[in-house]
Image (cartoon, rainbow, N blue to C red):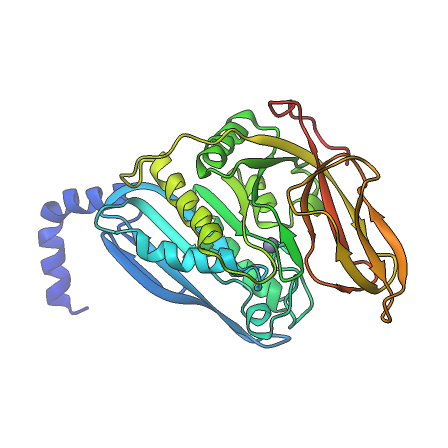
Amino acid sequence: MTRHLLVATIAFAPVLAPVLAAQNADAHVTVTVGTATAKRGERAYGALVVPAGSDSGTVIQVAVINGAKPGRVVSFVSGAHGTEYTSIVALTKLIERIDPKKLSGTVIIVPLLNVASFEQMVPHINPVDKKGMNASYPGNPSGTQTERALAMVAEQVVKPADVIVDLHGGDLDENLRPYSYWMRSGNSAQDSASRVLDERFGLDMVIVSDVDITNPARTRSLSGYSLVLGKTTFVAEAGRSGLVTAEETGMLVNGSLNVLASLKMIDRAVPASPKIKWVGHDQRVRADSGGMFYATAARGSRVLKGAKVGYITDYVGRKLSDVLAPQAGIVSFIRGVPSLAKGSTIVTVVEVFDGAPPAWTKPAP
Ligand SMILES: [Zn+2]
C-alpha cells in the first residue's frame, strides 16, 4: 500500500466504520471450505486438497451454498464408506436442490469422503491406509491419508457447523433396512435438538445409541466427534448392496431438505413425522470362519431369539451351519452377498423398545 492510499484510508475510516461493523456482525459474509469460497447468495464448488504425506494425497470435492440471508450452518457428509452409493448420490442431488438466493444460513455438502474406496470399490475402509474413515476422528495432520483427510474435515466441515448430518446406508455387502441413529450424549438440550431433526428427517426406524463422550474410543465416528464438540447431530442410512434406487435416494434427499426446513433455512412444508419404531441395543453375529452365506430372513423382518436367519456352506455347497438371531428384534441389516470371511458381520438385530425411547443411561466405560 502506498503512503497516499494509507492517508486516504484513514480519512475515510469514520465513514467506513459502520459498514465494517455490520459486516462483522455477519460472520458468514463469505464462507470458505477448502478451495470453495461462496459469498452470500452463492453456490461454490471446490475441494479439500489433502497433500501427500507418509502416503498419497487425496482430493475431496465439496459444495458450499451460502444463503442470501443469515442463519444456521449445516454440514452434510456421506461417503466415509465409499461404496454406500445411495447416500453419496443423494448428497450430489441435494446440492442442486438448494437455491442460495432463497436460503437462510449456510450448507456445506461433502458427498464423497472416501474417494479411494469409491474408485476401487473397496467397502468399509480406505484402501490406501486400511483405516476407517468414520472411525478415525479427530484425525491427525501428520498421520496417514485417512487421518490427514479427517483432520481437514474436522476443522473445515465439522467445527464451523451448528448441525452435522452424517449419511450412510447398506454397504456393498449389506442388505439394510433404512433407519437413522439418535446418538445421545446425556446433555438434554443437545439430545433433544438432535432428536427433533432426526424425527423430522422422516425415517420410520430410529436406533437409540447412548455415547459416553468422555471415552475417546466411542467418539471416533463423525457423529461421536460432533457430540463431543456440542453439535446437534444424527446419522441416517438408506440404500443397500450397491443398488441406487429412486425410492431410497429420495428418502435421503427429502430428509435432508426436511432438516433445512425445520431449521427455517428453506421454505418447505415438512411432512408429519412417521410413527417411529424406536430400537436399540444391536447385537451382531460375526463369521467364525469363511464360507458362502445364504440369507433366509429379509432386512427389516421381526425375529425371535434363536430364529434361523441364514446358513453357511463350504465352497462345494455342503452346509456348515445355520445362522441364528442373537436376540429378539428387527433385522436392521443382513449380509447381502455370499462372500464370507472370518470376522465378517453376518446379521445385526436391534431390540425393539416398547413405544417411546428409554431414558438416557450413561454407558459403562
Ligand atoms: Zn457407512
